[in-house]
Length: 169
Image (cartoon, rainbow, N blue to C red; front, top):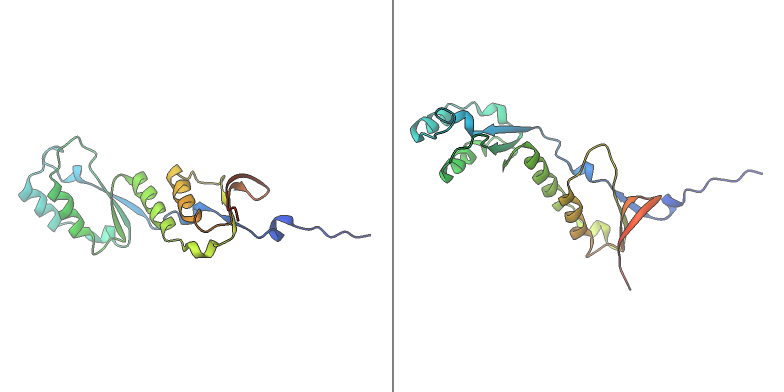
C-alpha cells in the first residue's frame, strides 16, 4: 500500500518571486568627491577639472558608480555634471549616493524592468525571508507592479503566507 506524496504547493500554480534575484550583480564602486578637494574641503575648479582629466576611468569600467562626498563641503552643482560626463561612457550606471543607496536604487530599477504581463491572473508569493536583507522600498515597488495584473499577492513562503491582495471578480 504505497501512497504517493503530493506537493500541493507545486500543484497550486503559485509563483514565488524572490527579490534577491533583482539585486545588482555588478560591482559598486564609490567615487568620493572628497578625494578631489583642496584640503578635503574646497573645490578649486581648475584643479578639480585637471584631476578629472587625469582620472583613470578603467577602474569604473562596467561598474555601478556611487558618486558621493563624505566631506562636509559645499559642492557646486556643475561638479556633479562634470563627474557624470566623464564616467558615463565607461560605467554601467552612475548613481548619486553612497554604496548602500546605489544598491537600493539599482534594485528598484531592476524591479521596474519586470514585465507585469508575466503575472497576469497569477497567484504570486513575494518571498519574505532570505540570505540578504531587502529594503522596504522593494516590497512597495513590487506590489505597485503586481497589483494591477495579479490574481493574488501574498508575502512569505508558499507554505505560510500573509495575504496582501486578492482580485475580486
